[in-house]
Image (cartoon, rainbow, N blue to C red; front, side, top):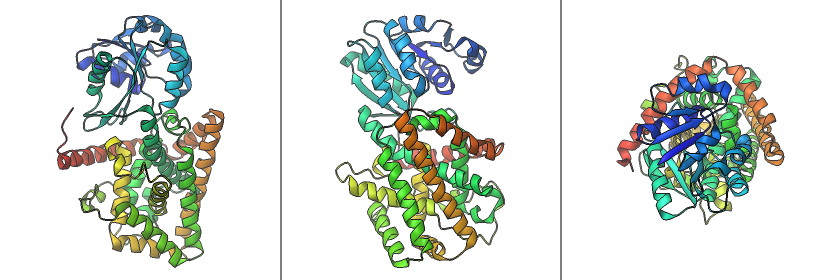
Length: 440
């Protein structure tokens, strides 16, 4: 099977190299002014770089569109009709709703459509990670051939419908990005670098800082594609914003009985009865610091994690049939989501630590309250931004806010990326060994 990839950015090029290594004939096309950049990315591979996207489409049994969500409709409209009559079409977008709309609009009715989503980024790679395969419309033979090709893009294959995929990514990636982006925005708004402030030097906050820097090290369109183009993200974003703000006001008003009841109700619903080993342990939590960790750590309410579990609880209550809890989604996980669940476990499954979080959240500590106020303000800011993007289909405001925080962290992002890559490799390997995972 010959495979054509339209778009040879970070993920397009990685996909091309993986498929080339698996023995497929792979051709790629990107804009002429990116030719030298594409050549560097694909150096040493057998991938053929063509200057004509129409030629790539005409010669391919499978056409993969690896472009930004905002460009997808135009690109599919330009090259899709040039493909072979019974060629299969797929894409690499994190949200499949706009992809399906573009396929429906521009592809002939007899075109096969089998798409995928790699649950990792270019710096992580496929080892130990999953690829989601979605059979939209195809003959059995075509589907089997395309599924086999996609299986080389991950260590295991998860098969879903596009609707199931988008609902799960709204629960996982969308909320993960919102939480960590809000943390980063809060730090930026306070002018605080977490590795230079004793409020954020503990084990949980080391990991939070790394994943925050990791997310802000990505291109803005990757993050906006996960959120504002997903039709299922809205109520998740609204609930996270509501959870963060309502918990904060309970803390600020020192309504201890109400706060304690709410936190423990969410804990019991999400973590009650769990006896398996947690995803993250004490040894791992202490390894990944961006600065020197003092012996006398300052208190932290961990409002981000309290709001996260409260959100899961309310989503579970609102949808008891589908049961959108984090453990169910671990089969369709990204590394960032896996670590996010691990952080929540680390706090909520340790009663002493959880009690300390509640106690500290009720103290009238100015620095702590200032950070929590900045965090709740940031969640509101991002919720409004995402809602605006969903309504207009325009990610400009989202990208502007994202890039403003990127500039604040500056060169520290690169260090965060390096250390978070190491963290993800260790966590992935530990989970593979505990689950006895094998490649599909």
